[in-house]
Image (tube, rainbow, N blue to C red):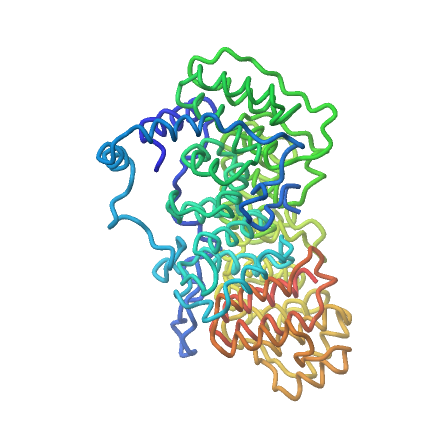
Length: 611
């Protein structure tokens, strides 16, 4: 049975007034790509495949779903929750005649024609640049779910993360040997660990509430907390309480009535939870403060973080929804993905969201356009701190400076060390760099301009700069050539073994190996030359691991979704210097083979910029 519409309306209305929470239902995910990226070029070059729209747990990690275990790790060692309310509700339903029960259900249940199938789940379709329904081929659902569970996110490559998000959000066929709701749960859980709270919520909302599995209920709890949207738990509460003894679901007995204006029921449930010790300390006080935001509430709660030694999903979600500041020390107890959750929290001011926004852009959760828009809005609001105000002024000049020199000079303020620019700075200046005419520039500046464009997929704009190559010399010229060699839609610079060897001599073996791997994967070097260069520089292009053989086999079968997932598996970690060149080769080669050449090139260019 669905949550009564009237109660839902009151609850969401309460939060809109008190907490400025997001609308529970969302539109399609934001695209991180410029218009036309990946589309067939106009020139004689062969048509390119279409490019997509974009794109430790917070201490709480859902365990494997079994009826006998809680679906979310308890916030404290609590006693089992009181089931008297559910028992009373069941008794009341038993007293109704079959006709009355059917009439009650008809008020809230969707007609059969409006119900969504579990055979094909996801918000992105091929028309919205999602993958085809058979993107995972005939792979075992248990195998794919195991890969998702064991993948440590965030992913080292921003572009690999963008591609993985596209695969996870696509409307794909549910694989064999896995329940459709569980399949949605594993995709949402990986999205959460990537920092994609809003998109994880899209995924859990792709399944009708009466078709949830215990596993999906568990992940939904984490998802709505990560999205700072506790009101979203209310339509799921009754169903979840039939499967789960998790304290979070038990506390919805108090939270949800408060949001619909029923303070009597809410206070009774809250007092009962306190007596039974369902949650304690900061966890109880945050729930009490949420209850205090409801209509006719008379509770005033002060939140103090003294003695709290870690951040959990419960603490993050409720505190962020309430606009209660979380100490930076607690963010140090979780991964960067939690800061990315913070970036999209609507209850927080722009100043509070800024650390999360910068991290989300680095991870691929936010696009270059969204990053620029955020700083533009911060400048309009007029409350930016001094360091942010300087960056905002530089960004304005980068877009609208009087001369090319003025614009590039302003970009320097974002890049920092011009020889090794900050990757966030390259992302922020991508569109400004793409708007520049090809002009005489310092070699290092030219390399950074091309690298900046490729962070946001402006590959054709970057390719225009190839005609400046002969005018460049000194530091940066080799980097400029290498970025165009791997990032341009077609071969716009000369590529041969001697040129590659010269690059290795200029920049060193580590970065040189990445170029060799990228060019080999893109088939922009003859196979024998690529193998010889790889061997001479200390690595091999052969598939010498189970992972390499698996991604190669998936590419041979044309499974874009499986390739995207295995690419992320091969690029786990947060340090480019620890990514083997062989892994980059197999990722780029597999993507190139299944027609995801634009993404393959952007990952290759990212490796050249960040390694």
